[in-house]
Image 1 (cartoon, rainbow, N blue to C red):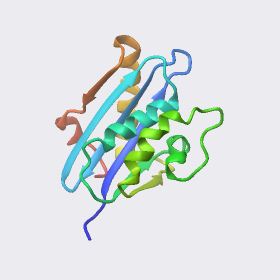
Image 2: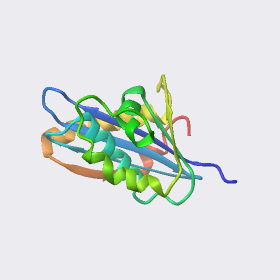
Image 3: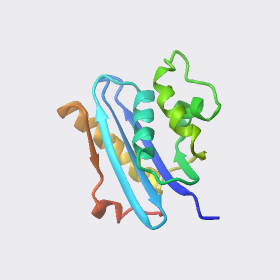
Image 4: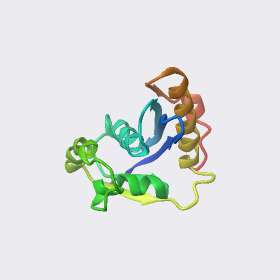
Length: 153
């Protein structure tokens, strides 16, 4: 049995300006990739779902292990059999429920992200949120030179 694909996902949201961002780092064997994006007028849940959808887009078949912090774990809980966040519309979850039906993804909550690929993704999600505030919606790959510096892979 091969090792599972590994995903680190972070979402960011600025409550006052309503802009948000997401970023992921993905390790499929020795291949490391990542992307970041953001939007204006959004919610933290929508950013977590958007980032997760992007991370799954061209992920090869096989088992995957998703690493997130406690806040994003709560936002993604309905996809893994947990309770949805209070007062949250469940419609945005539907496309991911269908995408997850055909693959095995396990959710792992990381208590302290310092020095992990999740900390790297968190920094990119914050940057993406700021960029979305200034320039509007976008999606961009994280440069390979930056990914080569990620600790903990």
